[in-house]
Image 1: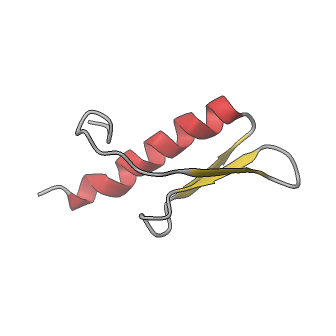
Image 2: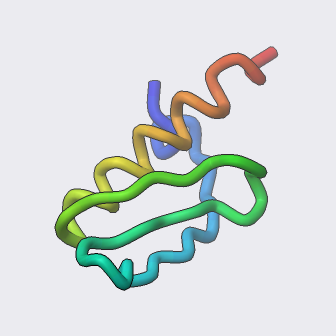
Length: 59
């Protein structure tokens, strides 16, 4: 299940990388970050990163 399917919402910071592409991070989840060549790709990647981050935290 994804974070969205669980009803979780996280603020995501997306910035253009100086070398091209985009980087994204979730400030409330330390170490949760990713990159992508396009905005669409970085959004897809950060959603996956969030899901992977919270999976082991489920009770």
